[in-house]
Image 1 (cartoon, rainbow, N blue to C red):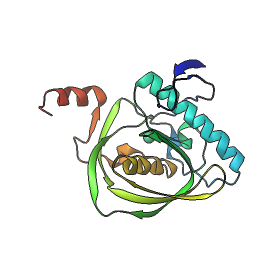
Image 2 (image 1 turned 135 degrees about the vertical axis):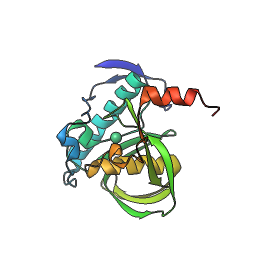
Image 3 (image 1 turned 90 degrees about the vertical axis):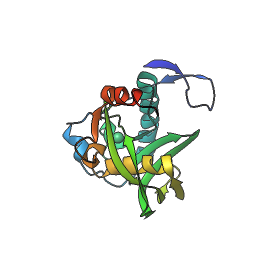
Length: 187
Ligand SMILES: [Zn+2]
């Protein structure tokens, strides 16, 4: 248990992170399992609470982090927790309604291999249907950062990791090397 100041801007109230879990790391075969749909909403709610606490703990210790999937704390259910631009999303049984043909490249990273950066492609935009924590059906239209983040977490639910999508022999780098290479370039 640790105490932090909420970094997410909803308040400056000091929080106690009680539900933070160990995050499974690259090479753990559980990360390759396909997660199963949520049937018990209460289980999903408890899991989302733990995912939020784990995300906050990771942000505190690593200085970055925006999304996490249940499988990353060893829970094999289709649940995702995301925080981006002051909004929080608890996604239960998410399914794509639509993915754009238009794609873009980015350097991705992951809680399960925080010392790596991965060059990959994601769809520019998408529409996602999911169940909220009250059991209601919701729809979200996402583009840019939220879209690529959702695709990253959706991959986790099917046992797919960002490293699987690395483009070319130089599409995988240590975070240290990646940062050093960029510090030598004008942008
Ligand atoms: Zn990840």
